[in-house]
Length: 85
Image (cartoon, rainbow, N blue to C red; front, side, top):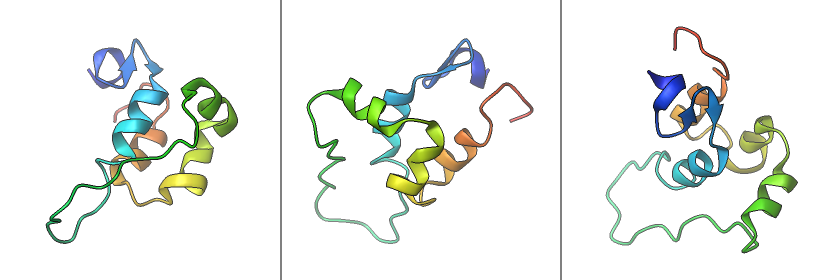
């Protein structure tokens, strides 16, 4: 059950830091193999709490960081409550 016990939702609550950090490197399209790994997302601070407080609403992720390049993030964020997804 996606909304009750998956990696990113626990009893309906989105674990934003976990989902964001995972999809900031995992969900991007890669049209061809790469010889070196991506460097990973730079939060610009060692303080994760400060980063996510500055981010604000979930709706800020795409315009600021993902730019609709992460298809599963788009699906995840368009279903914020338990539905047929």
